[in-house]
Image 1 (tube, rainbow, N blue to C red):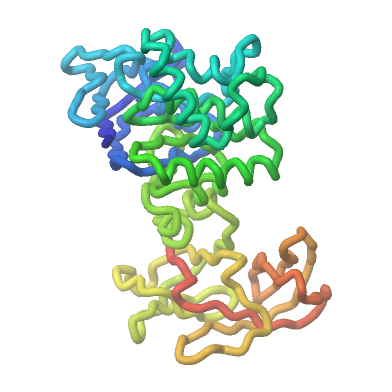
Image 2 (image 1 turned 135 degrees about the vertical axis):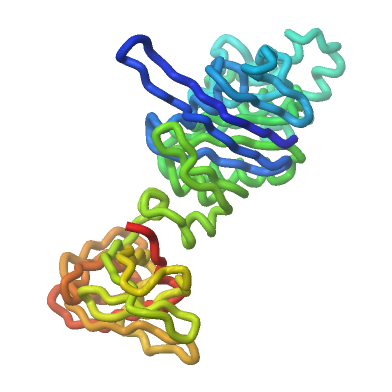
Length: 363
């Protein structure tokens, strides 16, 4: 079920103390996809989610789910949450402690007056789906955090919604359980023919779960795209920096050659992916991810590589990799090194980076 949002605005507060949580947001969420709203605290992502589900009333704009307008300031339409055909998984799971797993999941169907036999069949089916079979009679609070998250998912799915919405559902789990549950959630959602809208401030969650990502900032959508496009081909410095660690190096366009753009930096001249629209002399920012810098590697053919000489500083072991600073000319770059390597501060190293990994963005 496609979701189309047009000109959506929402302001909180009164008088001089007014905060624009959403500023004329336009967004299309494709049907049968996992769409993540990503951004820092206070950017408007949860407000947007709550407007879609009907828990917040926008000030202006329109929300359309499928072919049905569920909110419109111009037409005076405001469909209540329970009539929008949506499922919702909250950050706190909202598990009722006095109920069994079965009753927690069955509750929406009981409220809707569904026949008892149908409830048993549907709850049994969704318990199997989220791999909680055999646990229906157990008190819900006797489950682990990851299992409680599955109960919340099952309760949202049992009503067979057209769209399911998630408000940072993994944020209460520890790091290892969060990773395991994220993989399970991706597997479950990929099997379902429904639209999932997922809110998070965690870039790893967004990259791992999503078919599409919208990055928000101060109530506005800065950029949308597939996870790899957002990560490797960001169109703004804000998105490039927010979605992951990135070296940002001031540069000036020196010209264009063989389909590449040459830029001058304090480290020397580098060849970058084509920025043919950039005029000679343009001041831009060169962005390179730490993992795309290779140390002491032979230059592969036929790709043209930028090879620079620098000195290692401030080496830190973080488990999967070493992270180090490399001083090259007037810049100090963050570089990821293989955990099997044996780096030493003060070593002179060769740093190589392919042109396609050199992203040019406006300053």
